[in-house]
Length: 159
Image 1 (tube, rainbow, N blue to C red):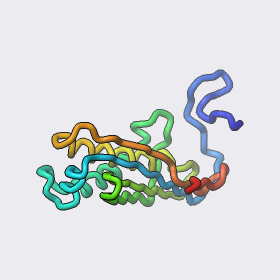
Image 2: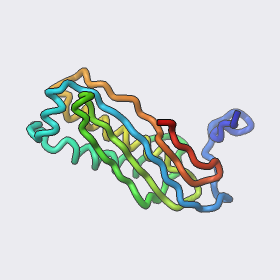
Image 3: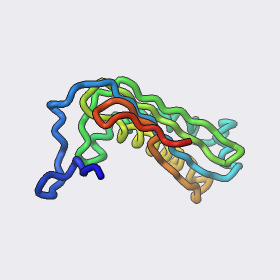
């Protein structure tokens, strides 16, 4: 099993030193879901929600969250992201919204946490905007779909 990189020899949490690593193009994609009643989803789809465009707000929140991941998750490095994309898809057949995020950079450390944070915060924003209409929405699952670049190699979830 691979060792935890954020734990030093004394068992203490520390920020990984990436100064000797080679810069490579790195990309990660993540997804999240928000389950809700059909009526709540219909309000989002037809634009009748009293708070405005839920998808536009969630998209911007996800992008902002990716850029601030290092402030939210201890031991994450501040990164110069070159791409953050958040896509939202209404899935009426499942009474849910699917969120997919993609983060990219050329750097010394990966962007998995940024992609996961973007998808998670977009989902939380949908909940926040719709909670007046429905409080029992379900967020999840949230997962990493793929990552590429870096020493640990590529990863892609099985379909």
